[in-house]
Image 1 (cartoon, helix red, strand yellow):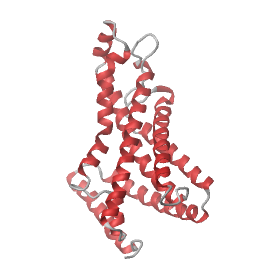
Image 2 (cartoon, rainbow, N blue to C red):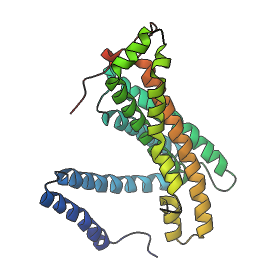
Image 3 (cartoon, rainbow, N blue to C red):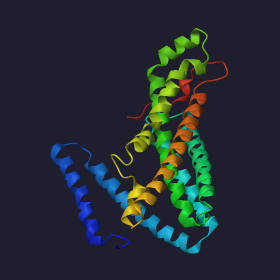
Image 4 (cartoon, rainbow, N blue to C red):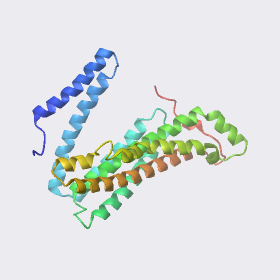
Length: 266
């Protein structure tokens, strides 16, 4: 089995994206431009990352590995904030997302690498970067969904929250149902991943290892280990993100501070 795809094979796969864009044009869906731009961006990014990783893996430099992980966390934190329809003023959404994503990713990644220390060189860039990247993606999605859900529901239910505050409830008591709803919403993707793994889908790591010729049972064990990591990272990230966001929307006088929110973007 070849280690990569030929340009012809990649071009054939790209034809599926072009077909999807053509379908958008034919049905006037208006998504053809975003599809094509996303596909182009993804292609360029992955090729550049592939070249970068090849250089880092060859060098074995711990500093280059650490630098890349810091850049990845910074980019993920920015993406979480940039995706929001509503954001906290003063760049606080980016600060909150950075704290949530970085802390959950680093803690879970350190645990994962320590767990692997008995079976392989856990300090090798070829081990550290892929594991950190997979965990980071899950943490980023959970934080993004959780923050978005919380900000939208708090804005929509402002009257009810302020009524409960007027009755003597604390900010936490008045917003507790919304907080729990946001955390639940943020964890839906990873819960669906775990529930559907094996029966509905063969997740990425398992599929990749099976295609590479690994024993299917060993591949399943690798995927189980990974899904447990993603679960912890997702839950940790969304809990931190939602609690910090809610804290910013209140003050010491138990008031709802929607003046700290930017106007909703179209």
